[in-house]
Amino acid sequence: MHKLLTENPGEKMILLGNEAIARGAIEAGVAFATTYPGTPSSELSLNLFQMSQESDLYFEYGTNEKVALEVASGAANSGLRTMCMMKHVGLNVAADPLMTLAYVGVTGGFVILTADDPFMFSSQNEQDNRYYGKLSGLPILEPSSVEEAKEMVPYAFDLSEKLKEPVLLRTTTRINHSTGVVTLGEIRPRVTKGDFKKDPFNYVTVPAVSRKLHVRLLENIEKATEISQKSEYNFIKGDGAWGIVCNGVSYSYVADAVKELNIEDKAKILRIGFSCPMPETLIKDFLKGCEKVLIVEEGEPYMEEAIKAFGQEEGLTLPINGKGKELLSRLYEFDPAMIRQCVATYFGVPYTRPVLPDISDVPEMPQRPPNLCAGCSHRATYYAVKKAAEEEGVETIYPTDIGCYTLGFLPPLSMADYVICMGSSVSSSCGFSKATDKKVISFIGDSTFFHSGMTGLASAVFNNHNFTLVILDNSITAMTGHQPNPGVDMENFNLSGYGRISIEEVVKALGVGHITVIRPYKLKKSIDAIKEAINYKGVSVIISQEMCTLYAKSLKKLKIRSFTVSDKCKNHRDCLNEIACPAFFLEDERVKIDPVTCVGCAVCAQICPENAILPLKNKE
Image 1 (cartoon, rainbow, N blue to C red):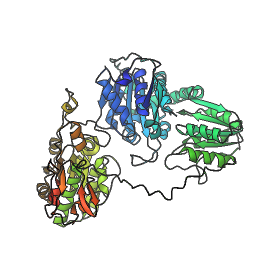
Image 2 (cartoon, rainbow, N blue to C red; image 1 turned 180 degrees about the horizontal axis):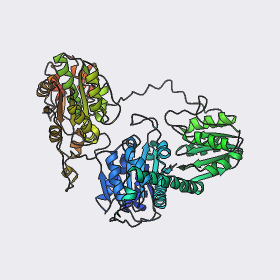
Image 3 (cartoon, rainbow, N blue to C red; image 1 turned 135 degrees about the vertical axis):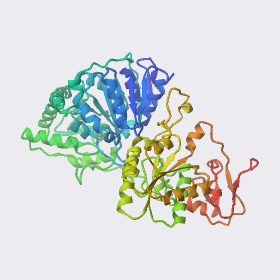
Image 4 (tube, rainbow, N blue to C red; image 1 turned 90 degrees about the vertical axis):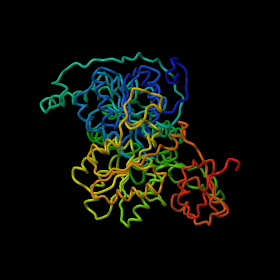
């Protein structure tokens, strides 16, 4: 049995933040869950997916976040407790249905998790999704610890049902990927079948209906504000004339700083966990008892703007500060030392930073740049495309997309010139091909193609653009942890009852005039096929098919055959300088292959000018 299905209230477990949130959903009686995978939320989806195979919970990986939210909205408006999960930029994709769903509301509890990523550990931006609460008029909850993350989920479902609105649960990477001790609670029974009651004058958002629904949304915001004022997740700790307002993981840093600076009798903390709508009365009363206030929040000055406005409304003139050159940055994550120093500086508390140990005699730690795995088929595809373009003598632009293939941007591959979001490689190629005379060759993965690449390709065919799209089909959604997508064979998950969509058939149906399927480990054949594609006038598509090496290994479908560099090697280092597989290393200025890392794709053997790279014999 999955550990998160344990029915033993009071038992303590050490859980990852995402596991704690999943357990909270189970305790809340979640019956229906959807997602499109994205770090830092991926483990939450994985745990619910696994539990759905052992229980009557329904779980679905959607084609993209918009689809996932729309599917979930149907379940939530049939009375089921429903959860939809995504990373912060995923909510951009789902924003269209989100804004109107706020008008329509829900009949069953509906929690939408948005996982923000300060410092961009695995993301293309640091956007602060608290503004989506303000934009949509939906409540936002923000946990400050792993334990609280679990406890907030049932509260969020109850709040959603009380307001008959979706509730946004906003986490950050530090909460999602920290571990903590969690006390298990009771599991509410799941209601897995609901009913949709037809009510077109509340559900069909033509203008006349939406005008009425907007009035209801504003009334709900007023109700949510009253609840926020009294919420257990908005509280004041301590007493003093110095005020600190904080949220999320910053609360732990602030609490530690106040204790370590020995100002517990001088400073009080207002922790905001129910952050939209902001608890206006609570904040105004807090400000009235302060001489000056510091606002500690990662990301944008979301709370700072509101709190300054509340102060102005009350005619208060005390200093209220947060973001600024001498204070806190809008960039990246905070850490305890940074907050301790900032609190000391702002309130004029004597503080000397601890002396750091002298590590000048310690060698610098080698940097490990992001890299494609040993034997990754994307490396072979990139090499083949680069060689084909060189041999044809064409000047190229390489738009790429979000996923493992983004890792091809570093030298020596250097196969990425432009990326902004999921699916953008196809659509941006249209612009580049019209605006320049260069050959545009773009890259997209299989999951990303289904996510948002098909619409761009349809537009490209319709408008008769001229570029080559390479679809890197590695049979899985790889970078976020091997989740399925519509092109995946679900028998590999030991699951039946799923369909499977052929990328080639989809591309044909969209009217692409030139389609080629290659096996990238066969370099010569691949290069020849790519030359034909890039010389085609119009939209051409290359589908590069090879299962993800790590995925194949997990399924025991990878026949590993390690290679070695023989005495024939003249040290030209084409292998290092052109593909830079991480299985290579230098020893005494000679190229070697790590037999443990090498998986035997044989790409290096095909590019070696001396044929010096050979299969490693077992006896060696």
